[in-house]
Image 1 (cartoon, helix red, strand yellow):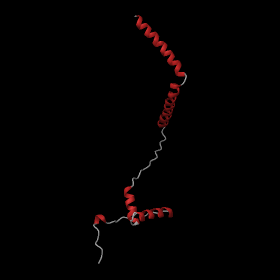
Image 2 (tube, helix red, strand yellow; image 1 turned 90 degrees about the vertical axis):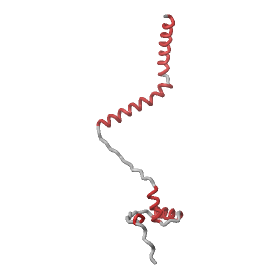
Image 3 (cartoon, rainbow, N blue to C red; image 1 turned 180 degrees about the vertical axis):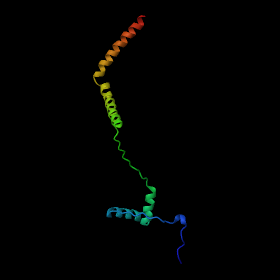
Image 4 (tube, rainbow, N blue to C red; image 1 turned 120 degrees about the vertical axis):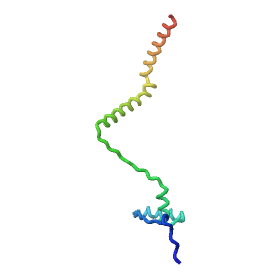
Length: 112
């Protein structure tokens, strides 16, 4: 007696040919055996579960883009200098001058 036919939706009509190295094939075969699945079924389940990330490399040779990249580099350099100015000696002179100006302004406002 013949096996009953599968529904048309469940039939696997399309083939994908795949080449593996001996090591890759051994790993996939062992994983299929550990999962108690035929090799084709195991590979099918793995292919359908895993997320594929497309990687794109964009190459643009535009003068405007090169200028923008250079500007961003300069801005980044300026931003990196802020902490050294904040915690270094140059800022202390500025703060001392600002404090003396503030005292003079405060003294003038209390006299009026």
